[in-house]
Image 1 (cartoon, rainbow over the protein chains, first blue to last red):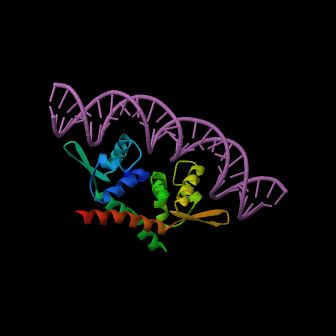
Image 2: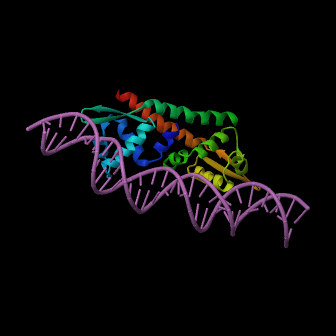
Image 3: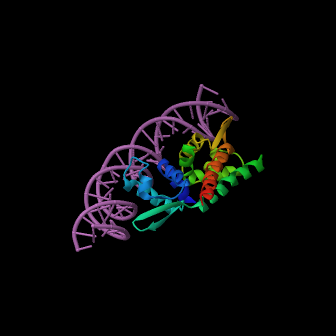
Length: 90
Length: 90
DNA sequence: TTATCATTTAAGTAATTACTTAAATACTTA
DNA sequence: TAAGTATTTAAGTAATTACTTAAATGATAA
C-alpha cells in the first residue's frame, strides 16, 4: 500500500487510471491523451505498475494496460477503517 | 481531493492519521511519537489540514488535531467508483 | 512584567520527482 | 534481411519535498 499513495499523488497518473476505467488501453493510446512525451507516460505507467494499480499484457507489438481492482479494494478497506474507528470514538 | 493524495503520499503523515484514529491529540503529543523535530511535524500537520484530512481546535496553549471523516468518505467514493466501473466493463 | 511552554513560521539544504531528448529493445512486415 | 512501429531505458535537469535550526507568536503563570 505504501507505493499506492505515492502513485496516486500525481495528477497525470490519476488521469491514466481514470482513462482505464472505460477499458484497457495500449501505452500509445494512453499517451495520446496527454501533451507530454511517450517516454514520460511510460515512466508513469511503470510507477502505477509497481504500485500494482495496473498490470500490463503484451499483445505482439502493443502493451495493454488494465486496472488492477484488487489494490483499489485494499484502498477502500484502508480508508473505511478510519471512518469506522473515528465514528466509534465519538 | 487533489491535495488529499499528496498528503497521503508521505508515511509520516499517514502515521499521524493513524494516531488520530484513537482520538484527538495535541501537536506536542503527536510529535512525541516521532524522532523528527516538532517543527517538521507542525509542517506535516499543516499539509494534512490543507487537504482537510484533519482540523485543528485551539484550547488555550494547546492545539488539538482531529480526523475529518468527511474527506475519508470522499476517498472511499472516489475509489469505489473505479471498482464499480471496472466490474461493469468485464 | 518576565519567564516559560506550545506551537508555528522562516530560511536554507539534500534528496526526490517529473519531465526532457536520445538511444535501446522488441515486434511486424516488406 | 532491413525498415518501420511501439514501447522502454538512460542520462541529465529544473522544480518540489522533507527535513533542519533559529526566530517568531501566543498563552500561562510567577
